[in-house]
Image 1 (tube, rainbow, N blue to C red):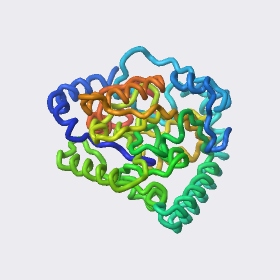
Image 2: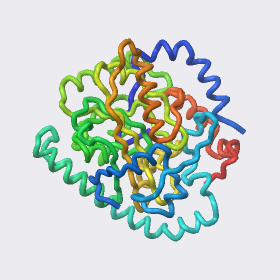
Image 3: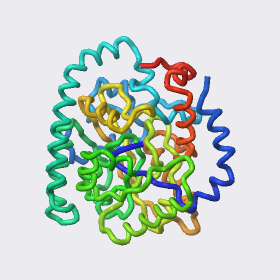
Length: 384
C-alpha cells in the first residue's frame, strides 16, 4: 500500500478477536487465496449519479463513454471474494488481455511517455513551490498550497465528481474512506484542508515527502507488518488521539490499512479508528481510467505505480460523501467499524470482507516467496 494516504492500524480493541481466530483465518486464507470533464472542484448533485454510484463502475461501458455521463453498472460475482480477488497481480486487467488492448497501448505509448515526462516536470516544479510555501497551518499558507495543488491536479489529468454534503468534510473530525490508489487523498484535500495518517514508506521519496508535508500535515506512522506488536499499536493510537485533540483539521484515515483494487470488496476496517470516541465521516471512493491498467500491483514499488498513474490520459475520482456516523449505545468498536464498512461498500456495490492488513501481509509473503511467474501460472493468468 502506498501514497496519498495513510493507513489505519488495528488497535487494542482488535486484539481479542485476532487472538481467538487469527490462526484459523490464516490457514483458511492461504487455502482460499490460491485457487486452481469537469473542473476538479465541481460538485455533482445529479440524483441519477447518486443512485448509479451504488452499483459500481463498469469499465467496459465507461471505456466508450464520458466519465460525466457514463452509467455505473458493474456485474459482480455472487461468490464471496477471496483475498486474491482484492489484489492486483498484473498491470493489465485480466479480462482486457486481448490483441486489441495491446494494439491500443502500443499506439498510445509514445503519447503516454511524453505526457508522463511533462507531468513529472510539472510535479517537480509544484513540489518545489509547495515546499517554499508558508506552513499550511496558516490561512495564507493553506490558500497557496490549495491553489498549487488544484493546478497540479488539473495538469496531471485528474478530475473528480462529488456527491453529498461537501461541508460535512470541513466540519468532520475524523474522515474514513476505502483505499484504491496512492493518490486518493488528493481530491479530498481539494475539498477541505486535512491531515493524513501516512505510512513512513512515503516519506522515503524526497518529492513525495516535500509535497505530503506541505499539503497534508501528515501524521507519520510505521508501516504495518504481518506481526505488528501491541506496543506499536498503542503508540499509533496515542499519536492519533493527540492529533485529534490538538488540531482543528480533519484527520483522514484509511481503516483498511492497505490498497485494494476496489472491484470485489474492501478489507476489514480497523476497529481502533472507531473506538476513539469521535464521530466518523465516511467517504466512498471509486476511480475510473480510460486505459485498463491497474493503479497498484503487488509486485511493483511505490514509484513504479505512480509512474503508471501519470502515464494514464486521465483519472476520474467519484466521491460519495455519506452521512456522518456515530457509535450507538453499547456498540463495540468492532461492530461500529463493521457497520460503517458495510454501509460504505453497499454504496460502491462491493462486499465488506473480514480480511485484515495482517492477513494481506501474510498472503503477500507467500505470493512473493512463490515468485511472480510461478504464481501467475497457478492462477492461470498470463504473465505480462
